Image (cartoon, rainbow, N blue to C red; front, side, top):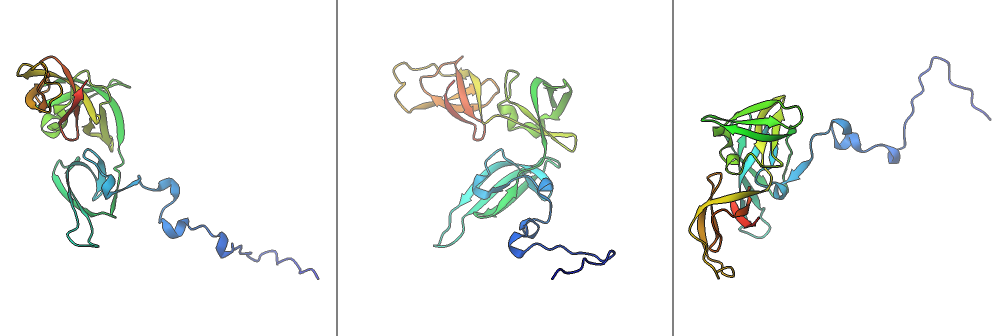
Amino acid sequence: MLRPPPPRHSQVRWELPVSQASPVPALFPFSLADRPYPLMLAKEIKTGTVVSYNDAPCIIETITVQSPSARGAATFYKYRARNLITKQKVDITLRGGDSLPEANFERRDIKLMYVDATHAHFLDQEDYNQYSLPRADLQHEMQFITEALEGLLLMVHNEEAIGVQVPQTVELKVVKCDPGVRGNSATSRTKPAELETGLMVQVPEYLSEGEMVKVDTRTGDYLSRA
């Protein structure tokens, strides 16, 4: 026997079976379109990574890993970071299973124009706008930046230039070192060398002035001949 249709003005409530209900609202208090930037586990955060901490973008400068002293204890990751808005140093400690979101900012392709006594001046490669940042805020990055550097990025947060990101490796010229010693290419002996940006690194004894070398910008260490 057919049931009569519901009254015209009654409200019909449609419900999905529990097995068909979407789990998203239970897991996230926001829509997928508005979800934050990806979370990074403590072990995935590297030097130079820009994370969001206390609602501000912070660039990781150093990392110390504290291994557990007892069985079953947690590994701790201790970071020294720099708040890119206030320029203040920030100490962050995470357990191995903890995570932080990547900071939300825009990246723009730039080139170094010139450096004066107080500021470094950059040119946007897309719209040719010019940006100036205090040299005091770029002490680490300026060790690796030359006018010829490719892959240099400007970080923009809330339409304000807050810093630059350098590639993980750069090529720099040796401008001062002791003369190269022939026949020592197979040894592990090193010597100090000054690079074109003023950075001092330890290089193999056989290298000479004028040669190009690859440097890790996260550690400032020599990697290889370019």
